[in-house]
Structure formats: C-alpha cells, structure tokens
Length: 225
Image (cartoon, rainbow, N blue to C red; front, top):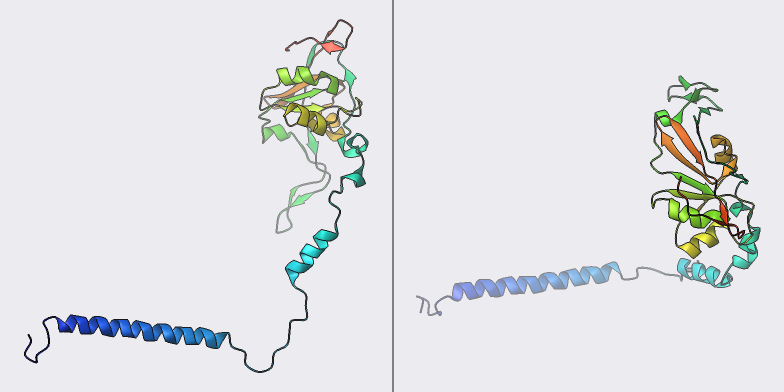
C-alpha cells in the first residue's frame, strides 16, 4: 500500500484510464464534427440534372445489340481489299533503295529550316527492318505459313476469293495477317508475288519466288527460296 492508502501501481492504472477516456471523448468530438459537416443548413432543393451514370446506361440501352449488319459482309469491305500483283513466273532476286522525298519543309521551333521541301533520303540509313515481309496471294497462304518465321509479317494481295480476306484467314489460321497497301506496293516497286522482302544493308532485297503447281489443282509445292 502507498502512503495514502492506494494499492501499489495505481498511478499506471490512473494514467491508462485517463488515456482511454480522452480517446473516447476525441472520438465523440470527431463524430459530432462529421455529423455537422453533413447536416443541412438552410433550404435545400433536389438536384435538377439527371444522374450522369443513368444517362449513360439509358443511351447504351437504346443502341442495338450489334452494329455489324450496318457494315454488311466482310467481302464488301473496301478496307480489306489489298493491292493486286501478278504471279511470279521465275525465281529472281533484286534490290531497291526506298528513297523518301519530303512533300513539305520541316522547321525547328525557332523557325529555322531543318529539312527543305523536296529533301530526299534513305530511311534505312536511320532505322532498320527487323522482320521480313512475306507477300503472297491468298491462295498461297499455306506456303507462306510454312516459309515465314514467327516474327515475319505476312501480307496478302487483293484480287482473290471474296471470302479470303486477311481477317477471316487470320482467324482461321490463328496468326495475324496484313493487307498489302497500294502505297507499300508502289514504294517497293512490287510487281509479282510471292515475294520476300528483307533488309540487306541500306537496301531492301526482294526475292521473287516461282511456285510450281502440282496435279493441276493449283496447289503450290512446299518450296523455300
């Protein structure tokens, strides 16, 4: 017992009790403040504007389940029609330099001309083409799939069956296929397919491949250039 008759350690108990009491009081004060912040002061009116999320959901509900019918069958999509090429009649290797000419001048922020209009340069001087381009008619896609590496890009020409578009064939074979655009055809000077394009130094090497047909069925032999 202490001098004043209190049990031993009463100081610790008293301090703990005081702290607990202070925490309870503080919590009550905070709760009261929060309640005060959300209380209505003065007159209030309902919000006139509709809920934004409700508007979005209503707009979505008014849309058709699918807009695909608006575009018609894929066979009629002009975006899926590639550039046409002839058929390679013989194996041939040639090279091109893909020069590019600026159709407008390029200026710095201060107005000084960096490159004038008409400036011609070879992009392969500054960048590289890491993958090959394997360009084929849709009927020769089987050969392209066996010839192309996984990192190569397969480009399909136009003029084949209306059902043999890049999207449909890509879904069928589980590989991304691309469309040969007219600008790519013109830039590379392509005339026939199959043709494999790869970078060789600061030039592009074009390997045109003649595929022999077997049995008169129009099936190409498995041949690697």
